[in-house]
Length: 99
Image (tube, rainbow, N blue to C red; front, side):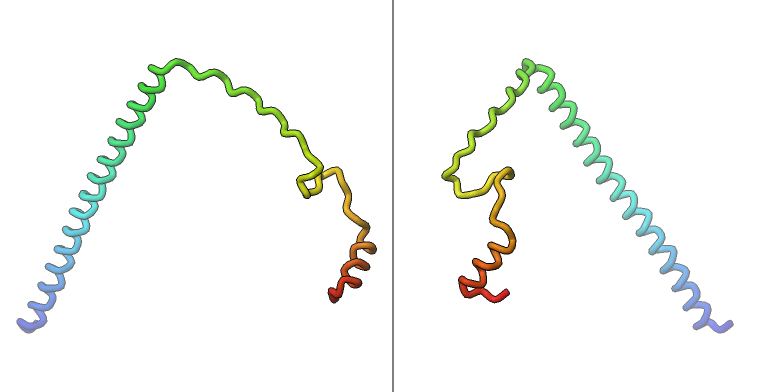
C-alpha cells in the first residue's frame, strides 16, 4: 500500500468515527430535551390535579331545553316534505333553467 492510499483509509476511518461520536452526542441532547419536556408535563399535570382537587365539585350540568321551532325561520324541518320531483323539475324548466 502506498502512503497516499493509507492516508485516505485513515481519513475515512476518522471521519466515520467522528460522525458516530456526533450522532451519539446528538442523541444524548435529544434524550435530555425529551426528559425535560416530559418532566415539565408531569409537573404541570400534578399542579392541575391539585388545583382541581382543592376546588369544590361542580354541580352537574342541567339538561338544555329544546328550542321552540318557529314557522317563520324559512327552513324546512325534517318532518316537512318538499314538492314532488316532477313538480320541482317543471318549475325549473318554466323558470328558464336547462335540465
